[in-house]
Image: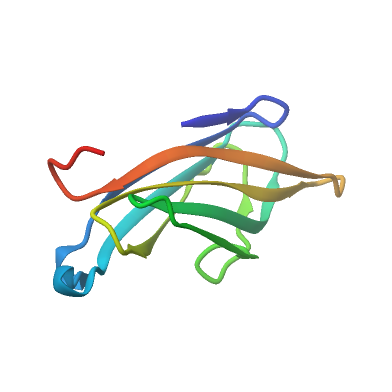
Length: 127
């Protein structure tokens, strides 16, 4: 969970393995991640952009940048959580994701909300 104090924004992450979308013999391991963003501040915010840094178990880094999340630039009303699920495919059984969101407040001020590292891993795998 991360917290951006100026705006009182909480970000929670849950991740897991998607065996039905993985092809281990081709070194394709699919993972899901569900992000829940709760705007605990008094004003509405809008999520404009995302930036992910995805590192596989061999240290290979892939950066992903783009507008919004899952095709949306959601408005985050106070105390109304927004959740979405997406996925990533790695060449290894374990990896790490981290990143940030760019948001804008009602006054037009943009800010970054950091997403701390979280693990993508097959069940019972250590790295």
